[in-house]
Amino acid sequence: MVGGGQGAYIGHIHRLAARLDGQWQLVAGAFDVDPERGRTFALSQGLDPARSYGTWQEMIAAEAARPDRVEAVAICTPNFTHYPIAKALIEAGFDVICEKPLTATLADAVALEQLARDSGRFVGVTYTYSGYPMVHEARVRVAAGEIGAVRTVQVEYPLEWMATAIEQQGNAQAVWRTDPVKNGRGGSIGDIGTHAYHLAGFVSGLTLDSLTADLATFVGGRALDDNAHVMLRYQGGARGLLWSSQVAIGNSNGVRLRVFGETGSVQWYQEQPNELILTPLEGRVQVIKRGAAGLSEDAQARTRTPPGHPEGYLEAFANLYAGFAEAIRARAEGREPDAIGRNLPTAWDGLKGVAFVEAVVDSAGATDQPWLRPVAV
Ligand code: NAD
Image 1 (cartoon, rainbow, N blue to C red):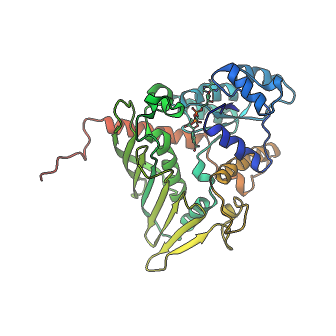
Image 2 (image 1 turned 60 degrees about the vertical axis):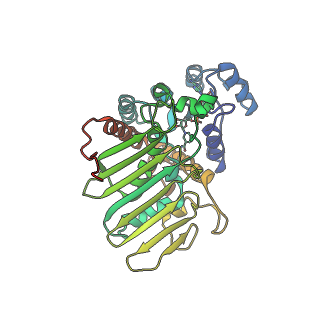
Image 3 (image 1 turned 30 degrees about the horizontal axis):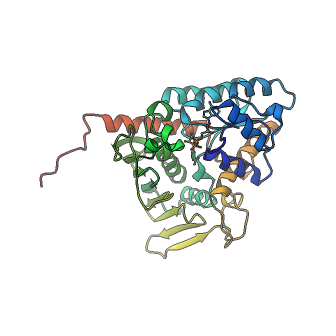
């Protein structure tokens, strides 16, 4: 692992998720931007002192020379570091699990995706919401035509944690997220809009054609957007609306997706992740529970406990890790992966996310917004 040291957020979740199914072992790491703190943290995790590295450069050089070298490296650092770290790892022959957004700039994302393709290395991107079984169930049902051709997609990712200027009070996670160099050009849209964008495309099966966006920065002194509204036009004519917000008070983690087709709709809400709502035209609202009989192979493969015993965020993250392990193993064995190793977010999805952010920021900054018209009264 790179990043995810003392006091960091997502690295801890990666460690828990990776361990859940016994498919991964954490054996080496450069966990912190401060080498000494990183080594101390590695020791606190029970790592071999010889594999408790001060920097990721040291780690790559030393691991590449070991007969028992690590198989893959998880990158859990701020966005602007993803590209140099991932590039160096791929060039040294390691598979990569990278946090989103894939990179801080589009040029880096294009280069990284190309490198991943040319090298044949596995690059998984942790779009968490595509780890949930009921999100897979929704995807399968939409693809099977259960709601007919998709007309419109409504997706939102509201959070409240940046409703005040916490970056000015030294909140470690907010400080780099509000720095355009370290974060990239898109504030809320890069940080959480990319999750929403991926989720919408994943379930609907639609490919985005174009967009128009309205970004706002509500908290004084903040350099990047903390609220975004984006109108989406998908290939084939479907429409969409995406909202990401870091200032939506009352929402701890309110990811919500609704997909409306010609003959029905599906809805999923991350704070009730064990349920998928399916409504056929003129039919009854159906609550489909995780673990129920007759669910798709895709959902079953990502389910551990019977219905009624809730699963959630950690299990969804673990599903990604189990999937990445299966994809890597299948490649080594020259076979098709089992269900859990299919439909995973990879470098291509990461690149699409960064391209989306780029288009949103360009759109919002354009002086000729065609839809921005004054209202008469
Ligand atoms: P954080 O600030 O909490 O942690 C970053 C960690 O990286 C720290 O331990 C820091 O010391 C370390 N670090 C920084 N530069 C380093 C370097 N050069 N070498 C080694 N370690 C270094 O950040 P976070 O909130 O955990 O976010 C990290 C990444 O995860 C970001 O890309 C973010 O977008 C992503 N993220 C994803 C999700 C998700 O749902 N998938 C959730 C939160 C964050």
